[in-house]
Amino acid sequence: MLDIINIHKTFNKGTINEKVALDGVTLHLNEGDFCTIIGGNGAGKSTTLNAVAGVWPVDSGQILIDGVDVTGLPEHKRAKYLGRVFQDPMTGTVADMEILENLALAARRGKKRGLSWGVKKSEKEEYRTLLKQFELGLEDRMTSKVGLLSGGQRQAITLLMATINKPKLLLLDEHTAALDPKTAAKVLELSDKIIAENNLTALMVTHNMHDAIVHGNRLIMMGNGKVILDISGEEKKKLTVDDLLQKFEKASGSKLENDRMLLSKGEK
Ligand SMILES: Nc1ncnc2c1ncn2[C@@H]1O[C@H](COP(=O)(O)OP(=O)(O)OP(=O)(O)O)[C@@H](O)[C@H]1O
Image 1: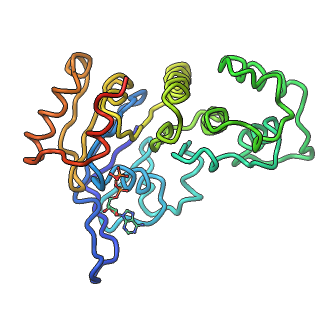
Image 2: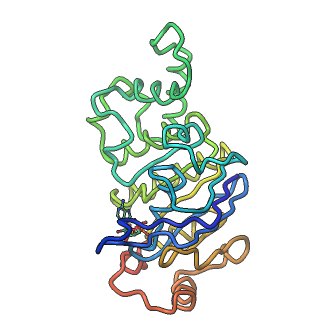
């Protein structure tokens, strides 16, 4: 489903701020894989997701989504394959528009609009059913402006918008990091549900080792712009946070110090 083949990206080449962010990243995801990405500060996690989304061109290497080589495609031409949710709950939804309008907008993305912009009754019912499963009471607030919702509620709507057209690949970039622990757990539970029910292929960046272990069927760890660990199947199911720390130290040859990944080690 996703093939990332030996991609390299250096920012600010030839300047004092030169930074090798991706140093030969290779990753193959099968259809239905839900892969968590963990790694120290600046390891290249978000940069990997940005490379897949086409935020800027990579310097070398190839990216294929469902067999289509998208390496040379600009961001807007890759958007039809992808759903994305970012850390900031303020991005992803339009604050001045109703919940209903936001969902209708997402559902129409990339499609010909036809003659009518109105939201059909059947669509309203569909959205009501989708919202109801969140158990956040949003199905009774469909005409509320999104700007009035809490961060967690907005992130739940963004998640629904990102997946409403069943993208080939869902990219979650620390999408619960800005939420309080209880809301973050709820949004993660919703993510699991949506991914499983729609058999989506997903990549989720997190700095929370516990979340990286508990969610998904595969875990990769990045260090210095490379994939340094790739754990799946039974091995992942048995993994503990302490195992992961030990593996990190062995694979990277360094200890984690003052790192967000370490700071969130004991969460939950
Ligand atoms: N657009 C950019 N311009 C310049 N440097 C960048 C850019 N994007 C990322 N970088 C640099 O590339 C490196 C990798 O960044 P990235 O955001 O991928 O790290 P990360 O693994 O997501 O880390 P964190 O957990 O700290 O967010 C960092 O040194 C970062 O400063």
